[in-house]
Amino acid sequence: MDNYMNSPYLFVYGTLLKQQNEFGNYLQKKCELVGVGKLKGLLFDLGQYPGAIETVDDDHWVFGKIFKLEDFENVIKILDDYEGFGYDQPQPNLFIRKLVQVYQHDKALLCWVYLYNLRLKGYERIESGIYCK
Image (cartoon, rainbow, N blue to C red; front, top):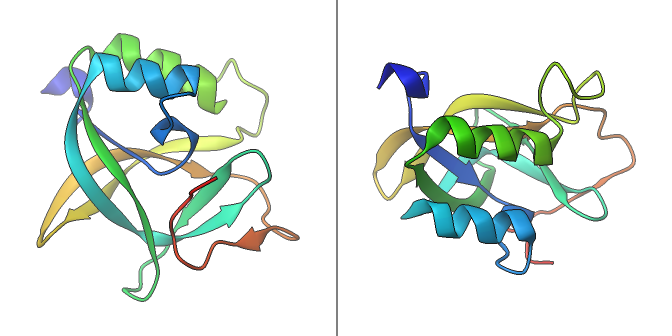
């Protein structure tokens, strides 16, 4: 499991959920769907896509799906590029990839997630925690 840097799981909550999205389609073809999950956080409408930030309280959740990445290194490199994450991307990165606790029913699973990394002033919060554009 060392080559996964502690977890082979990825939690997605936005455009990667869409099969009509080239990268969402890629994710669904290359990875195993584990199921639905939720992350303690807030979700914002950034226009063409959403952005989530992590919180510590149980009052706000971001809902999405958990995938197991079978070919972790190759898949995550492609998704990092799509999400604008990495040293070779414009700085500061639009999103950061972080290991977080994602809840599936009553159990917690350590998952990678792309969290929004820039200012949120002026963006509307998606109260439901569900991105459905």
